[in-house]
Length: 595
Ligand code: ADP
Ligand code: MG
Image (cartoon, rainbow, N blue to C red):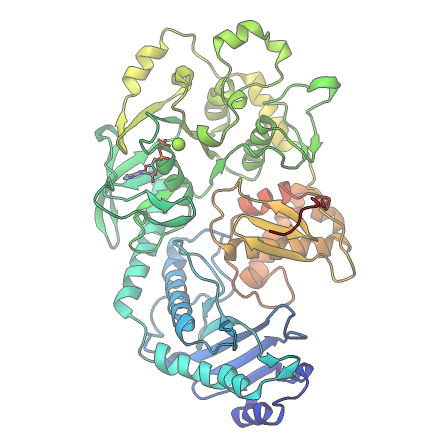
């Protein structure tokens, strides 16, 4: 431990000195009421930023140190699953992260260009198991990204003093000592605990999802996850036939729509809220902040949304359950392509999700390949079965549910063919679901039923069980392994090769894709070492990821503690490796003058 006065002296003496002298700051400094630990020092002002953490003893905070469990970087027991035992600690951490983030926006020391020198990733609508704030036996830990201040390549001593001494001490004195809104903190905890409890109740009751009456599901815009506000917002109201009441620890008796396993259709005219309900379900694998509108919506933790992603890469997937042989005699028993079609990509996404452990898939016609969803009787007359390699989902839905236990929630406004396979048909009318199962069954009686099939089930099982490997991804440039970066919640790059993750709707926070990029980078390093075989094989890699998670949790998968990452499920990890490409897009010179 080094002393405050030595840090002060550094800032004074090194003012105007060469930037690399900042390297001497690595280590832990005892300030007034807080320790500052510099984990990583950037090589120059333009390199990727420095990392630091603050250790704030409980005695310096207005928080109750005896309150709730401690949850450090080891994270929740199961990766990406906020369970009842850890819900309180996750919520406290998340809330403190938001509090610090809000304070930083106003009070962080700034570069002359206005850029904040201390940063934390903004937290969105989800409450996540993340590393921004951690709770230990003796202290609260806050992790930050820092830009060590410079003019040109010279140290700016005064600003360094502000950033490294004044700012942490102020943060503790003005925020942690008495600036935390404890009532709001308790509401945050309540939302998170109720969610975790609701999710565990789903398992007890054998439901796959629950949407509480009064929930507000609509979002403000396609690029704005905050709730839609105003008089026109219609609150959720469950159909009586599906209405159930659960007792939640904070909200008390809560009535809403309980979804049973099976094939559930969301029908109804355009613009009546089908996609909104589906999206609310797919996002409800994690809790949402108070006021979000989806606090009391939960689905089983293995829920995964699936869509068509034409153009994506697929690696060694056995697609035979959905795709018989392709033109020119190409077999689909182990398909590898850098350019999948819409239907092929959707078939792959379903099989990949199932292989990664999901037995609950959410699919929207808006983002599906039509020929993957249905083939209607007229088309069947034109194209004999043996000329169409695609076995549409319609024909496999009963097999999926009855033989493999896969529940489906499908938005289909365009085809009543799905009545033939549905256990439950909900019609959305002005954002309210109406149970029309009986009428839909009546109508479907005109057509032959589509029964489950043992041969088809065998094909699915084989596709799940056949050994398979993930793509190795692009070759690493240099000995330190690949450079992997998270650009957005749904986009990472590996050695400048872009990997699109928008097919996984569950990824909504950049902290989550940062964790994914950390895992990818870890694997790229291990691939060139003794564990390369293990890192390729799907099942072996799953084992290795789980082992690393139980060893070090959020701080696993890398040599340094992780700043601003959030846990994701194996489903997202596998989904990321499934989408790895090996080659970058060629550079194209459009020959255009700049505007
Ligand atoms: P669909 O998929 O049935 O065509 P969407 O779910 O896309 O419909 O919803 C259509 C529009 O209605 C969207 O702009 C959405 O934000 C809005 N919306 C959805 N649910 C509600 C609601 N409960 N109250 C008010 N507006 C809503
Ligand atoms: Mg829609």
